[in-house]
Length: 205
Image (tube, rainbow, N blue to C red):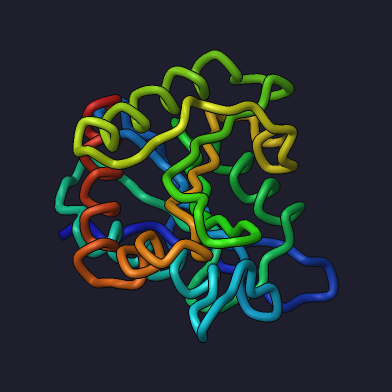
């Protein structure tokens, strides 16, 4: 299995990023950044001991483990349970200039009735059209598997606006909904999400 590139946050006076290997773009490869939302002190959504940061990290790790293609090169904005600011994530992603940035999150709402997956892009992005195209393809892949999926939504999220590459924000489900939560916290659910994301990446390659 091809080892993924990882973006490592360095503890230095000036916050910066280093890569485990020099990055050379190969025309045959697709280079994708998986941004596992939140991390460390930033727990994100949480309920009954489950946190957004743990779930996004778990799915990102499974994407890494399932990737067996030499032509799919995956980078990550954080390693394990680390805190990386939004600004530093953007700097690292733009330095890589990937073909796609996919930011993983889980949702939360008051009450327990709202459920399903949501996909966001930003009209303020330099790569808005391609972002919207990729979001539609990924959304359709999940919808074809009978997931509850909303139409692609627009939002001025910081990373979506500032990343120069096509960028999609993926809310994998609602932690506040028992059905979604049971799926998101299961090995089967996490592996299915990861496998579908990988299929999507290979499709757009």
